[in-house]
Amino acid sequence: MTAGTVAAAFAELYGGDETKALPLCRAAVKELEPLIKPGADCEDIRLINLGAALVNYRLTVRQSFAGDFVSSFRAGDVTVKGDSAAPLKAAKQELSSAFAAAAPLLRDSSFMFAGVKV
Picture (spheres, one colour):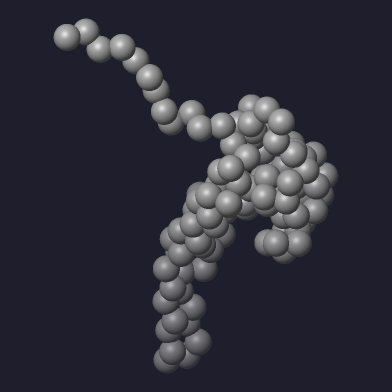
């Protein structure tokens, strides 16, 4: 998995600009590398798609903070309102689904074994 493969997947899956997303793709690869199980195929499409979903989520968060989502539109007597949080919810769900798909290739860091004194 490289920043280039993640950027290409991001552009294909989410219609984003590969060039503009490249810095976030580099960061996503660096963030995900330590989570990959030893011996797992780093070029597995599930990992690449996970990187792309992470980039999509991060960009969606940035857009929501910048107020780039239209929440209402008025044309004459007609007003259409939308949920401005919907894109963020969708991106978060997409990221969760990508993590679930890639789970067999990722380390499980949520388990802890500790002794208990009785």
